[in-house]
Length: 479
Image 1: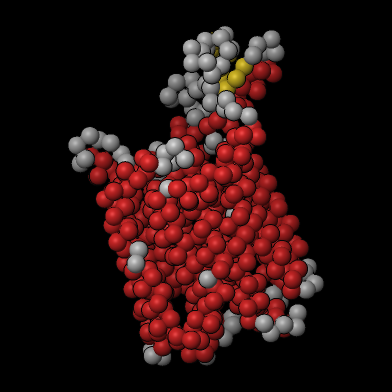
Image 2: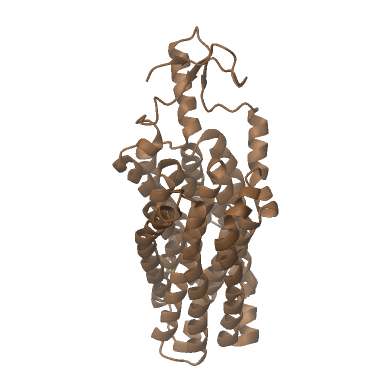
């Protein structure tokens, strides 16, 4: 690529500086112009990193009786906390990794967090008491939150808005499917080798993915790529002053500070981010509430014990898979159709929102089927069908929200995703703590009906967002 003089009339750069910029719109170094194979290589690696982290969030759930027995505790609240505190780590990690990614790119935070995730799992594997396990489970979730918060932003770096549906589906599947698979593997692994091997399994899995990422994960953040180009040019032409065309005019400290506060500002002052994040958070919280109570419920009703209890999560997982496949096919088609028929050929982020409508309807239907068939002691396949419908509905909420946020706030995609991840993870970590008491008080039927009624309350706001979302988004642009 060539260097060029860029006398700046805007005052952003001094006159006569050499600007490191793209070599036109078709520059092959620009992530959106990468060959399809390189883009999908990045998507695949980020999806693997995303899979490993939430896989570990629920893997320990079927092993908790063994954990509590080893550490001599019968406290049910601590038992739930040991599982759910991992997800609470997800609530704080994005506040660190989102600003880091906007300053230093996607690659470095993803790799550094993966190394720390591996170390935290080693400490969990050698924990000598329950408090130590709980603390380092939290830190493991904290470090494992990077791919969850940076995945959508990385995909937005590489794909045009109207073509990112399949890539988002590939990344989004591990977010909900991995927690469904974790207990299945965890149950058998615990019976064969003890609960600590759940942690060692995570060390091995992350180690393999990390090695692949170290060699093949590419930086996709435009400002970071141009900054690296400017540094290479500066090393070659030491007598010139060379800056990136996307260099920030603010200090690093101010840039990081603004990035740290941006997710909070979006949550507090952007109505569309508030509604979508709350909808996603309630869905995520219900998932972990069910995951932490499902084994006990089926054991009580049907006498299903470990490790076979891990198979019970497959109904939810299959719903996730089918939801992702269908969204991967229809999401981009819907956007292209709405763009072609709006009279101006303009693609709007709001064209992702209509797919939320079936999600907000399927989720309560699934909860009602699951709760009342369980309460009536109908054959176990019936509540599994409810879990399948519930899993389908949660995907139809999670993916449209993630895809919408990165395209509604393209310059700050990581911060918008972080705002969603923070609220989602808070409910995912806290709701399971009250699940046991809720079902004890209301029973399986009315307990899940309560969750369904809360889900139904989101249908009117989602319909309003589909109608007025564009106006609300434009009011949030300056945040």
